[in-house]
Image (cartoon, rainbow, N blue to C red):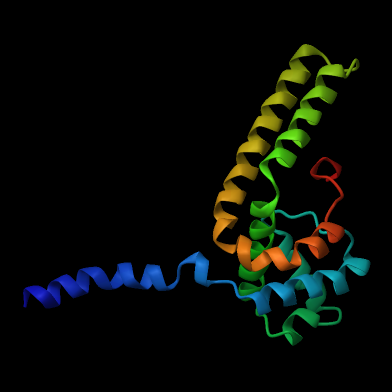
Length: 166
């Protein structure tokens, strides 16, 4: 009886482990995501990754060519695969590159003659918040980085040349 109760308590933990993000993205799915971005980008424009972009692209494609659904994705599975792919890509960017980008943003801000000190302070807060969000995305993407790594060069060509360009 005690063993049955223990198993019932552990069952949700096992379900969480089996549904862990690390097992959620396959190389085949990541390849499909990258291929779809390549096909859709000429019509949809450069993918600027954010929380709503997966749904937006799915809905736009649904009334257009329907390529995402033809590749086997539902709206939910597309969102999951795109999010995992993008986070895995972000996780693979060297920290030195991220630090250099944000240092440049801060330097540009410091040199901006048209902004007041209050405006600069607000932008500095925004930049710090963006850095924190990027750090979180990279942490969440760590389990997918190895799966996405073979597609990193293709993704780099598809995304804004620099995060600052978004």
